[in-house]
Length: 434
Ligand code: DLL
Image (cartoon, rainbow, N blue to C red):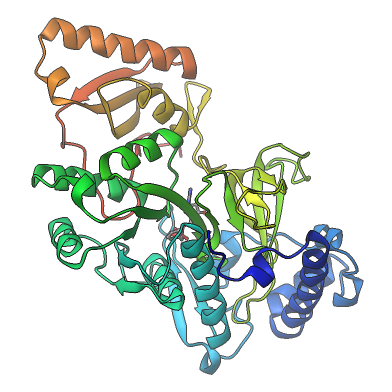
């Protein structure tokens, strides 16, 4: 299993800590000098760059969150003049308010280094033909992975988002061996291919690099079985760079973090105190090498756990568990806390349930209503009414036993829940929560 940059990816933990400290110190000095917002915040916290003497001192730094990027929109957090910025990307996020980030030439180099590591960890080499299914837009997915894959020397097929039949034709014609997209789009690709009569086991496609949205182990198993590939997960976010923050190796046992570029902490989302070893919490990221828009202690809202246990692949970097939940995607239904991922886990354990579902929450006469619409296989759908009712009850009972709520389960025809080329939308909350 080749390692893209062994010098950094297999560095001893001690050498890494020294490197991180040096880089943290320069990042603080860099923003203190150049970004009014950070200078004010650091002054308020009584922290001068010279006070950063150990990695633990990161805890004295102020947190940054999405609101800071919104309030300083568009360029208030930039640490370099625009003539040094060679690219902009943006994200509208879940709430629709945009944020924008910029990259210097140096930042683009770092970015492609990080995504090259992700692709290489997934097993991509110069022998591969890698088809990109992310949009080449303000979204960081397309460009981010494109340049990393190119850096490895693999052949990039920049097909972009959408037009699934064309994707499949290209895969057949060019002999695509690796595919890059969201996990939900990979499933949709499988489905469209099956509809076109494609036998995926006969295509050279062998590996998938999926990210941009949560996906559980069952979803992975489904993708692997239907596309006949190894499915790997990679993670990142616009505010700190885009894809390339972390990615799985072929062992599929956690996502290796590019720790020489990102200092990660995991904190209790409510108290903001560090969690104990082996505990899950909110991931906080401080960039260590970014020039245009470094971020200090960014609150990702993503829940994960980090381990530094050695990995069989030889990389010494810490690994984070797959992100399944965000602190802000918890639904409170009739007072019960529910994460969409809990519902997904229940559904995907039930035979005949397809990984396409929609959770609809509504409020009628001040009472919350939970409806779960699920696609089921053709055989269930065309079964006797009596069987369908029994099946629906079985699903509702399982949901009740895990989530603690009674849900109205609605079976819908295969293919009827909307497919997206980007991030899947699994929740529709129609309540006016003021
Ligand atoms: O989604 C960057 C990206 C693109 C990563 C392509 C990987 C591949 P944003 O649009 O800013 O950036 O969304 C970032 O998406 O905070 C997570 O909640 C979620 N997310 C990203 N990757 C994963 C993943 C890109 N592998 C937000 N697993 C993050 C779970 C993910 N959630």
